[in-house]
Image (cartoon, rainbow, N blue to C red):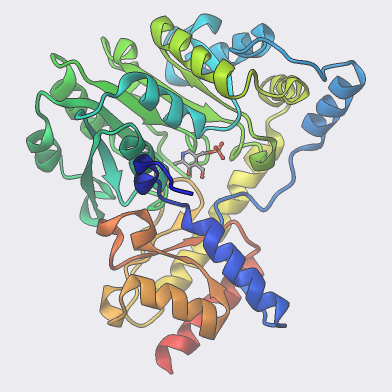
Length: 386
Ligand code: PLP
């Protein structure tokens, strides 16, 4: 069976691959601390689960509107308008199965063969995959540790040309935990103001933050019309397995995304959307507690990592990933990640799983207990001092 050429561009998410390797080691009786997968180690809050159960009993077991239930889109539009200080309505919202389709569908809908799309590197690997599948040229812009893992704005500016159709921003970022400062967002808006460039602003970690709030480019006058906001339920409500996310965009793109959705999924699961309403309108204290716990772990874990020989780790401003610089250890990132798994029982990801500019770093998720995180630090210490 011969696969289509476009499959050459599909990358996989190595978090899932490393998880399989780690599970295989565990099956042999080895103990592994899982710091590879990007999901909260918390349960979905009870009132959200209850809303889903009730919805099942009330008959939300049928197809629903492709764009998403109007009540949920209303609630999302209000949430996004309030949190970004912008004005959007339910007509701007597409509810889809997870945040990922808001990368896939808008890129398929907007990007032509030969176009160029700018994206952060190291960054979420799905960006590069989907740019490639659309037949466009992926243009990676390095994130600079000394700039808090924001872009080098000169490199970004020099990369713009008439073929540039989209810039993907992600703040707070996976895998670095960095936040793009407001001045940089403003500078980027200035660069695209007079160009026909769309911004895909991946804001999935917008509420998993430890200090300064992230700034959405959609807030800048004139930018809302050029921006697609990606957000969802997976991270902030610990709902990764529910598969529900959303995008906020201009109506012509909403129509296109609806067409792709109807061809692909028909609609997002109906009872989960009722749970989505409960998530956004119900008590937020479980999410707040989760973020407070992530902060506690971040502080202890990063301090621990900074005590390791050859390791220095910037303090993440959001998400739940530490991205330690391991250049001084003398190991290549792939080699270190692999040996930590095989020899120390610590599953993490090589920085290069997020692109070539991730060399010199590994990603360790701190969505694990403080006890396990500190044990992981000790295992890494033992390995590095061996
Ligand atoms: N964007 C980023 C930066 C992510 O890290 C993830 C998930 O890991 C997503 C989008 C997709 O989230 P979902 O699981 O809702 O599809």
